[in-house]
Image 1 (cartoon, rainbow, N blue to C red):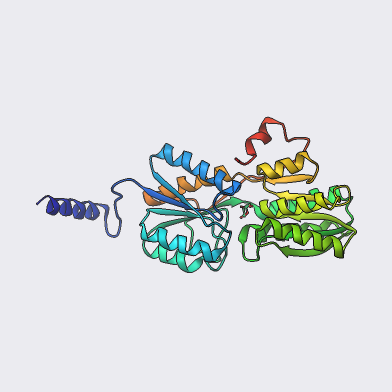
Image 2 (cartoon, helix red, strand yellow; image 1 turned 60 degrees about the horizontal axis):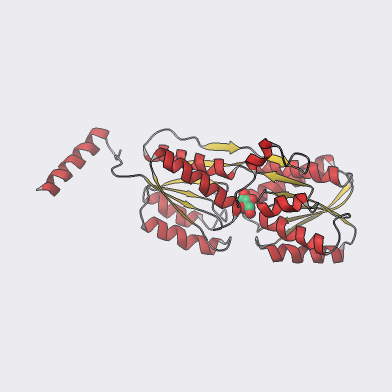
Length: 316
Ligand code: T6T
């Protein structure tokens, strides 16, 4: 009898909302799927998301693969779909590989919000929240050019092709060098698979091939950590200047130690918080914002200890 009553109430509710509109009963369940579990950028993002979830009274679960790898992230997406959350916030680790599992999620009416990275399907992601990575890449190019006196050989170290964030940083870097720094000889990009020791190996090989290497742009946290420690161990800090994206504790230490000249700090906490806000709005049938750019800031040894910069450093 009770069951029958509940069913009638549910039917009435759905009918009152009109057509296909559904009403949310019970708590809103949101799952954040990181690009890489335990890494400071994504952990800082999770902190921001958790704080916002608490404020809005929604359940938040955080999951992520042990490696930055779409073949490891895909089964996580599949198991999250099976747990039937109201919304998924995800940082896809590949622009193509994640389209199929996210399409599955969409077909189950799970609201999808893309945080930090995107996929190559404009129909996926009710909201896309990230830094302006092209602009960040251009800022890195300007900072590196200044460090190396606008001349000499420059190399980029990235994760893998097909990662939207770092690909955009490379684009911004290359455009800026091509347009405004004719004295810089650009050596192209090498990929570390987001692995610290791979990034170190790339730098060692690059130094062997081009002993007159002048500058390195490392497009993310692990690339910068590995590249920086290789430069340090090779005793090349006075010869090769480096600019890195991200501002985790290891990068800040490298800045203090003179291993890296400048960092581009993103706002992962804000990306996570805004992601939860958008997810909740989507679940409630409220308007969402298709694209939300978040700021990034250049961190140098000179401004490191200012209160504004201390606020943007990632959590350990
Ligand atoms: O740079 C961030 C993130 O924006 C990028 O998409 C992947 O790498 C990081 O997580 C840092 O390692």
